[in-house]
Amino acid sequence: MNHSHLFQMLSSYVDRELDAEERSLMENHIQKCPECERRVAELAAISQAVRSVASMSLPASFAADVLRAIRVSADESKGWIPAEFMARRILVGLSLVVLLAFGFTSLTNTDPPVTVERYLRGETTDSSESQILMNGGEISQDDVLLAAVSKH
Image (tube, rainbow, N blue to C red; front, top):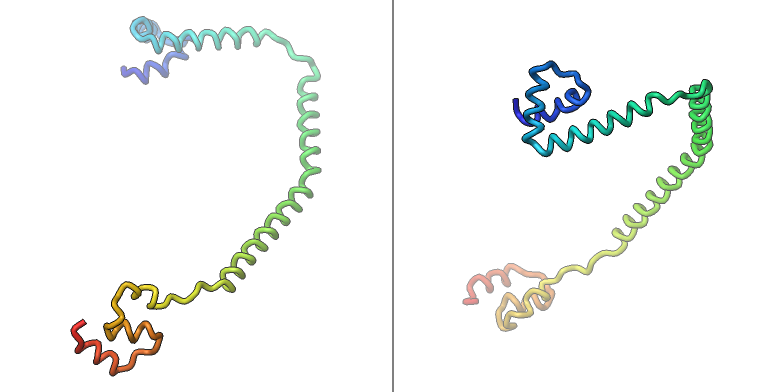
């Protein structure tokens, strides 16, 4: 058996649910494995604590007291339902206001148009291309032809 299988059997070992062969195997493993030995001690302490509490007796009204406590808790939570409903509506309304405000500002605040001048400032102004583009005018067929035959 592998260690994980033995580790899972520790609870059965502590509860004395194993047959003689499995119990002997577990005892040999526990002597060699400090992790399993520590786990057996923990499980034995838990088992002892459960046994000590098991002898405790509950009052005859225990079940009725528990049911009453559950009903009181349920009644208290019902009082919050209208407030939660209203809070959700307010939250949805505020979310819509924020989305509408964001959409409106994004539509009204347009970025300045990108001009070619910003990108051609490093060029010399004697080239025909930069002269046409820097002037902001439209490019005509003659300008294109001139640019194509020029050396720049």
